[in-house]
Amino acid sequence: MTSIPALIMAVPWEMRRAIRARQLSAQAAPAAIVWDSNQNAFDTWVKTLTRIGDEPAIVLEDDVTLTEGWREKIDAAIPEHAQSLIQFFSLPRKADTQGSRWEPGRSFAMNQCYYLPPGMAVDLLSAAERWRTARPEHPTGYDVLMADYLKRTGQRYWLHLPSLVQHESWPSEINRRRPRNRQSASFQP
Image 1 (tube, helix red, strand yellow):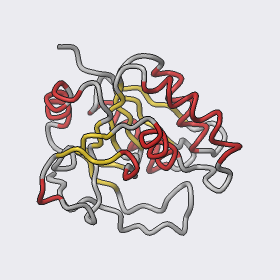
Image 2 (cartoon, rainbow, N blue to C red; image 1 turned 180 degrees about the vertical axis):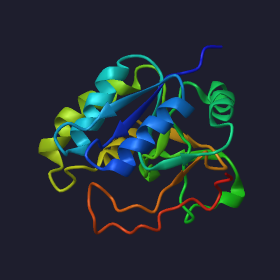
Image 3 (cartoon, one colour; image 1 turned 45 degrees about the vertical axis):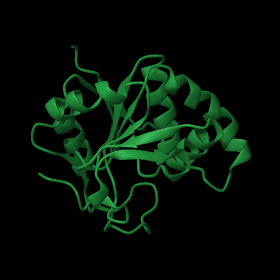
Image 4 (tube, rainbow, N blue to C red; image 1 turned 90 degrees about the vertical axis):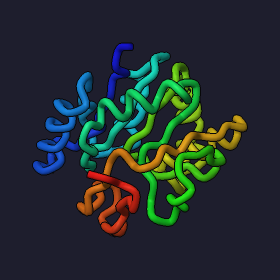
């Protein structure tokens, strides 16, 4: 089986993130970096979805650390649920002791690392066009958009545990007031 490509959403003007994006690109190969070109995470997400098209893909953000053997673990986890969105990061508030499981679409949050099945990127692009005018209170909330999309289409997503990435405690580039302590309790380096 050929590895599913990864796309890394990255901020070029913040040195630590640019360096991490290049490291992730090497570690997650095959992987490509999608650089933010106008300081707008939503636009970068749309650009990422456009590059994915109808194909399956893994999307990463530039502020994560990968578990050891990430590529092998993610390639092994996808086939069983390859037609569904798979979330590879969870926060401590999730009941991680329950293990991997189906979650209602409305609960999707945190875009650190997830898998999009074939065709979903195109569907999300259509939803993104309506989102900007319908939900102006969430100008960068593409995870909120994804939760709304999953709920509207009656889809659940697969939550894979343990988390295969850890969220760094860096300041958010979207909103500096966001808390830095958004790490997964289930991550195993």
